[in-house]
Amino acid sequence: HWALLSMSLLNSLLSTACSVGLALAIALTVHSRGMRLVMGCNSAALPADARAAIATNDCPFNTTRIYDTALALWFLSLVLSATEAVLSGRCSWVALTVQGIRPCTRTSLSKQVGQLQCLLRSQLGFPSAAA
Image (cartoon, rainbow, N blue to C red; front, side, top):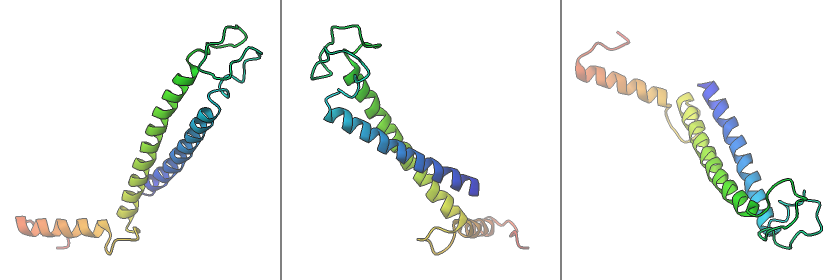
């Protein structure tokens, strides 16, 4: 249970950091209209907008669709990373509950499961585990 808790907390933190980084990259790219994406090109013929086609071969990549492609992939990655962070957080919450250290519960989940097992055994006519 402790391994589940530690790994889910670590994954939640890393996914959150990844989401923040992707959000920052998207914001910087939109703010600069894509010019940060083509800064590696050593050309004086760079247009003011990265969405315009560059008619020079000084860039090591095709610059015609880099703005749209990067934003589409980054947005999808941001959604998936945020979802992963939420699910990891929920997994951490479950691990805390199983350990009985969740701050909102009065009794631990282990005790509740034990009580439910005793109740089911008595209802079904099985001998209790304590006997």
